[in-house]
Image (cartoon, rainbow, N blue to C red; front, side, top):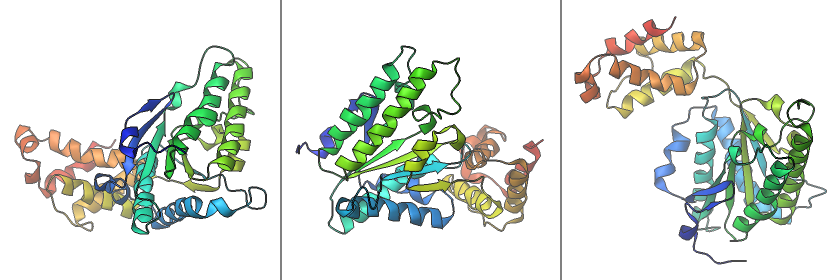
Length: 299
């Protein structure tokens, strides 16, 4: 096991993977607290991560097969990726508070680093990820949380793969993911994988069978939209209550239009830039009528 200082790993790029955080880091707290989802989802994710990193080492991979793999699925803009960052931070905080690990590594897999037009190259690249790159990071001995965004680009559904788009390589690359995930789970119990997808049906059935915890993110309901609006307004110094008539009206309009959480937050930007340069220079002077006018931008 290597003893490389954790800070020396920060920002270091390996094939398809970048270490983006040595945690805990207070600057990452809002990536958890500011994402408005069902609190039960957060509780399950945090409990899952802590269980995997503290208990899995004593479990039989046959009698209690835990891969350390969580899947976050749902429409774009619902906070999946940001919450994965926040989850790593919360795991690191709890491990540090309990004296289990002073630091936790967070790494991000680049989903676009693996597809290739050359037959067999995707399979080899994915094999290097799971057989070399991730095990090498895990070998430093620190808890390691890995984000695999757009997981459907790696574990493509072989049932849906088109025979017009090099299906042999698709099958082989997906097979390499499955084999690699099994090996990583068996040999490195200090790794938690958090995968995200906008299209769960695009994932291979065998990959889904390896998922330990599956959480579905939906478009925010009325109460959540109101909270998101209030939180975003507070970022520019505007204080409004979630039950203010203007907030309630905009929230209802957002829900009716199927607006995702990211778009809800951008509405506040729209209110700022649509009302002249004086408001842009002093957004804290925004008034309730500016917020109410946001309902008018929806068709």
